[in-house]
Image (cartoon, rainbow, N blue to C red; front, side):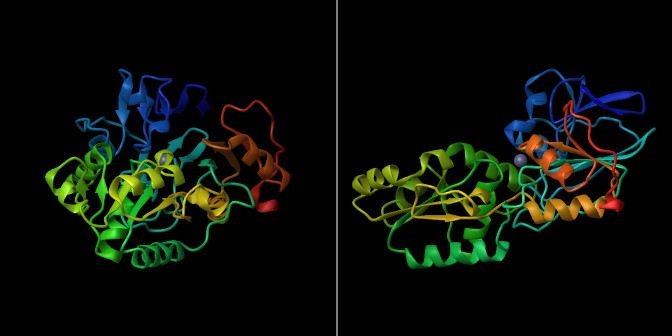
Length: 317
Ligand SMILES: [Zn+2]
């Protein structure tokens, strides 16, 4: 059912988060999943994903396919399809917990599960999400006389951080032009966000006293913090919000393990809960994940992998 070009269903081939066939499913708006938007393709995606991508939503008739919340960022959906070989599910990037801007993914039962394996390694475990939010609250409160700059991905994570700062800290952060555009798309989808666009008069006014800003994570580090401190003659604290903070050191004052992915534990919870007989590991770390799953007796392969997996079933594990 899954060919190198995509999923064969109902006489169509639908590529999954790439642009290898004419019809493409785009699970969500992160750039490593949206190649189809820059090619002339018929796109299947949620209305929110079209809006975040700045494209007009189009209706596209599909049968034998359903979509389900993926819990990763606004508009992220899982795909479920009835094929001749049984039920197939592709999770896309997913999370089993609610976030401030997206509802949790449900575990879908199926025969074949193609699952995102970004964190499918035993050491990749996240602390409870509430803990990361509490630490963000404490950090902003403690440093309310300093400029605070958070590093967070422009799409998805920045908007969630805006919402957390609004709701939990009563702060409207300054965001750059790109993040502001995505915030506006979120608002069109009904997610209320209070933010200030950099470069506006409002931002200039706000930045006369200690303020909170969100910037792309690759720009936020100690060196940037000290340049900013010099420019504004104020103390500056730097931070990042990413799931990788659970296992990696970042050159900032504080790193918060705020993830929008399922960690190892939740990925395994999905795999077992789906009762799938076959697992296809997709996206980041797919080869390492397939090797790990095979090592514990699960019938798994990496997407487009050539290695044959052992024929075992989850029930036997
Ligand atoms: Zn993603």
